[in-house]
Length: 371
Ligand SMILES: Cc1cc2nc3c(=O)[nH]c(=O)nc-3n(C[C@H](O)[C@H](O)[C@H](O)COP(=O)(O)OP(=O)(O)OC[C@H]3O[C@@H](n4cnc5c(N)ncnc54)[C@H](O)[C@@H]3O)c2cc1C
Image (cartoon, rainbow, N blue to C red):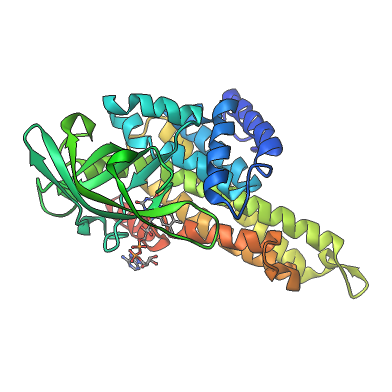
C-alpha cells in the first residue's frame, strides 16, 4: 500500500487497492521461476482480465504506473516485468501515435499480446548513438536491416517497437522509430539471465516497412526514445522500491524470529542499524520516485533530472537493502531459490537497464550544470 502523502489523489489510493487485491491473489500463483515465457503470458492474461493494464496506455498517469510497479515488484519480479513491458512496448505509440498498431495495442491492453521495445544493440547499449541498424528509404516506405539485442519479451512478443539509423543527421539525431508486427522479425537467440526474464536477440533481414508504421518524424527516433524513457524511467525506480520494501519486510521478519546469544537478533544494535538503514533507503526512494511521477503528471514537458535521480537512488538502494537482507539471513541468505537469494537476483539488472547508474549520474550532473 502507498503512504498517505500529498503526491496522491483519491484515484491513486483506489489504484493501489485494486493492484494489491489482484497481486495478493494472482502474482505468486502465476509466477514460475523456471518458466519465464509461460508465466509472462499467464500474468499478462490475468492482468488484462483484471483491468490492470488500462494504466499502461494513454492517457499515462505516471503515479499510477509507479504505484502498480511498486506493489507488483513487492509480490513478484515477473509480475512487475510483465506489467512494465506492456507499457514500455506501447509507450512510443501512446505518446506519438501509430495507426497500424491500434489493434495490437488493444490486444496488449487485454493481455492477449505482449509488447517489446528494441533500442539496444550489441555495440550500442549505453551509447545509443552508436546504433548500426539501418532504415533506408524505399519508395513510399523503408527497408530495415540489422540486429537488436537485450529485447525484453523477445521471442514471445506480438509486436516490436524498433529504432534504426535513418541518417538525417549524425549520431543520435539520425534515428527513426517504427512499430513492427512479430512476423516481420527473426528471432536469432534467446538470452538467459540471473532472474527469470524473457529476452532475445532479434534480426531485421531487409524488412519492408510501410511509412505508416513510423512513430514520430524521420530523424526523431532519439526524441521518441527519450520521451518514452522520461515516463518509464521513474517506474523502474518504483519497481526497485517494491523490491526494497520486500527486502525490508524479510529482514524484519528474520531479525525478530531468529534468536542469537539468548535474544532476538533484532535486539542487537548492529541489526538495528541495518534495519534503520534499509528503512531510510525505502522512504528516500519512495519520496524521489513519487516526486518524479507527480511532477510529470503535473504536465512538466521533461523530468529527466528527477526521473534519473529516482531511478539511480532507488535501484542502488534496492541493491543495498537486498544485500543487508541476505546478510541478516546468514547461510540462509544464499540458499538457492530462498527469498533473500531470489531478491538478490531480481534487483541486479535494474541498475543496468533503461540507463545504467553511471548514465543516470551523467544526466543528473548535466542538469545541475545547466540550472
Ligand atoms: C534484463 C535486461 C533487460 C533489458 N531489456 C531491454 C529492452 O527491453 N530493450 C532494450 O532496448 N534494451 C534492453 N536492455 C539493455 C540495456 O538497456 C543495456 O544493457 C544497457 O543500456 C547497458 O548497455 P550494455 O549492456 O551495452 O552495456 P555498456 O553500454 O557496455 O555499459 C557497460 C557498463 O559500463 C558503464 N558505463 C556506461 N557508460 C558509462 C560512462 N559514460 N561512464 C562510466 N561508466 C559507464 C556502466 O556501468 C555500464 O553498466 C536490457 C538489459 C537487461 C540486462
